[in-house]
Image (cartoon, rainbow over all chains, first blue to last red; front, side, top):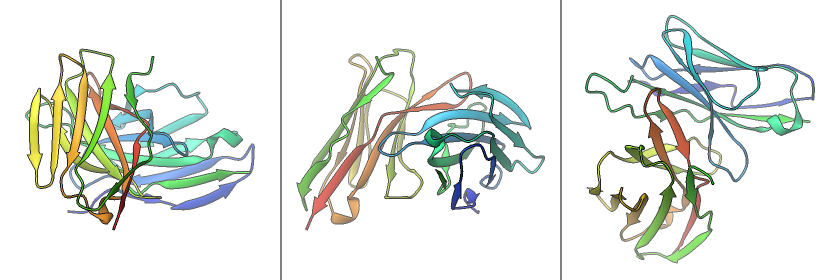
Length: 116
Length: 111
């Protein structure tokens, strides 16, 4: 059973650019969530995808968007990067909280984005 | 008021000490509680998961939930230098699976 994998691990962008981060979910997990973790803070929920549809979103502007593919992998796209977007971006996969599943979320190692 | 409050520390203890990490939360509807451990520049790793009041034990770790006080705790017995990390409490909201995290407590265990 493979865990959650994310790419790239590190990247540097400049203000105004766009970035795409990628995530492969744990085997069998059909729900993917993205979190932003600023330095010294707990992760903040960005959005969640289930069956290729966004089914929940946190307090992030529309320039944060995502996709989920039929194999349950996912992308996070951020347009018009700002300095405050510098953070660790975490992907988590899970099974739905239903049908006896406990809904535990398992995280990847993250993609560390620096915006200059 | 934040939904989940957690003292950021750092908390420094000697090897072998019993560590107590705590969080409070504001929404009495919360039902699922988790503790994650996060080493520097790594992703969070799920340590403990519980959904009822009371204690849950796993090796040197004990998670405690008091829903009447909206208080959750993680105890680490016989702490080791390898336990040095940031410990994040998290609450899973129902409806859709959103985790609300505390800020994390940085723990330092010295040999």
